Length: 123
Image (cartoon, rainbow, N blue to C red):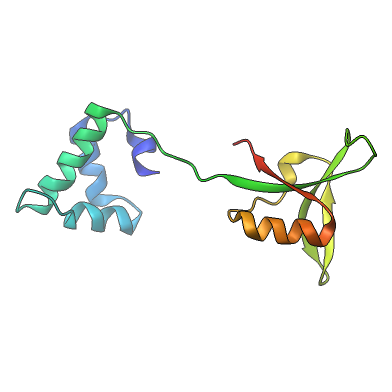
C-alpha cells in the first residue's frame, strides 16, 4: 500500500510523491479526489493528513490454505500447492509453499477434491 511505504515521510514529501508516483492509480487519485474542497488536490492532501493524525491501518483479507494429514493423528501435514498436468495435486511439506486462496468457497471446493481441510493462513 502506498501509505505504508511513505508513512514516515513528512506531509510535504507525501504530497510531492503522490503527484509523481510510479503507480498511475495513486497519481489519478491524488489529482481527482472528491471532498469538501473545490481543489481536488486539496481533498487528497486532507485525506493524507488525516491518515497521519488519526492513524491508519490496513485490513488484510484472510487467506486460506489447504492442509492434508499424512498420519492418523493429524500431526504431520502436507499443504496444497496447485495442480499440474490437469488435476494432479502438488503437495508441499512446508506451509509457506502452500497456495493461498482469497476465496473460502474456492478453497473448500479444492479441499473436497483432494480430501483436505481448509484453514485460515496466519499472515
